[in-house]
View 1 (cartoon, rainbow, N blue to C red):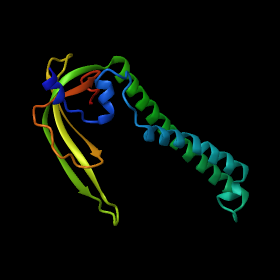
View 2 (view 1 turned 180 degrees about the horizontal axis):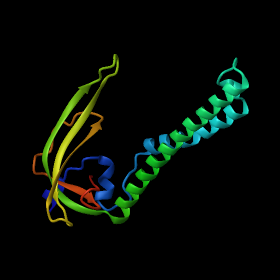
View 3 (view 1 turned 180 degrees about the vertical axis):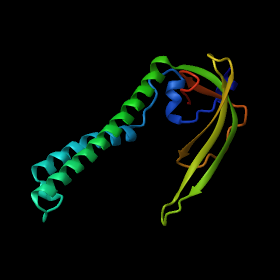
View 4 (view 1 turned 90 degrees about the vertical axis):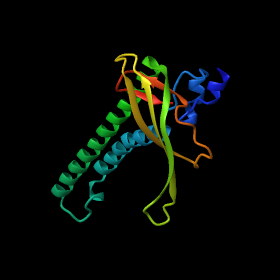
Length: 180
C-alpha cells in the first residue's frame, strides 16, 4: 500500500490535506470570491455617488440628459451586480455540493504533459501549464468517465508522473466531479 500511496498523483497540491483526510473542506478560489464580492459591493457605492451628484457623468449637460444617463448607468451597474451575484452563488453551491455529497473515488492517469506558454503581450512573460487526462469508474452509471483538465503551475515539474498512476476524484454525479 505504501508503494501505491507514494505514486498517487495530486493534481493541485492544495488538495493534499483533503485527500489525506486531515481537512473536511476542499480549498476554494479566494481570489475569485473576493473579486465577485467586490463586483457586488462596488456598484452600489458608485450608484450612491452618482445619484448624489449626477453632474459627475456629464458636467455640461442639462438636467434631463444627466438624469437619463444616471438611470442608464444605474441599470448597467445593477446588471453587473446581478451577474456577479449569480456566479458567486453558483460557485458556492458547487463547493457546497462537493463537500456535502462528494465521495472520493480512485482513478487513473491516462495522459499528462506540461507546456510553457509564452504570452503574446510584450513583457507578458510566460505561464507553465499542466495538462492531464484521467479516467475513473462512475458509481452511478457504472461506465468509465474520461476527462481532461489543466491548471497553471509555478514552474514546470522536473519529472512527470507515469501514465497509469493513481489519482483521486471528488465525485458528486456524472456531471459534477473534479480531479484532486
